Amino acid sequence: MGFRQGAILASCSFFLGVLFICYCVDHRILHQELTEEIVEDGFQFYATFFNAPPAIKALLHGFIGFGILGLVAKLQKWDESAIFFDGSSLVAYIFGISVYLAVTIPNLRTVVTPADVDTRGDRIEAMQILAAGNTIMMVILGAILVLQGGQEYARRAEVRELAKIEEEGQKAKGKASAGKDKEE
Image (cartoon, rainbow, N blue to C red):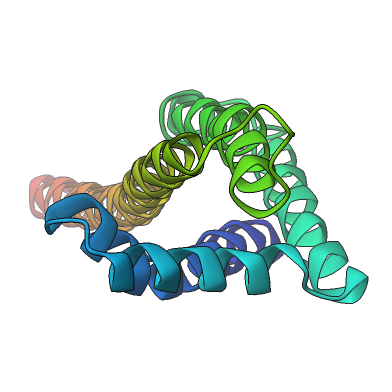
């Protein structure tokens, strides 16, 4: 594994960790009867998340760029493996970023800093959409990790097959030269 694949794995794993922390609140919002306690926990959690220091936000956005950089760098080696595994990973990663930009940020703003026209019901609905978006991003990041693992498995299987073919070629070459020695 090189730097490029490490960049992808680190980025995806970091965001999965962040999203698993969010899932402690999200699963209650999505899969349980909404009570006042669950709603207030969600509001408080996402307010803390939204009001994080700028350094935390810079770290999150830096890791987004780090993942894209790793995927684009892996595409420089233009072979079937890169096209299938890295191309699919890049498409999934961009889809995950799109979910973040189109779902997470606007709904996080609605939950934490609602406009004058937003009711409590609007904030609760935005929190439910935010939780669903986080779950979608978890699935996407998991798929990227599976694709990267599949690529490494395929690469190792290819190396084993090539070594096996080369070994058989050496044996056949050895038998052919032994047969020539007997004829002389």
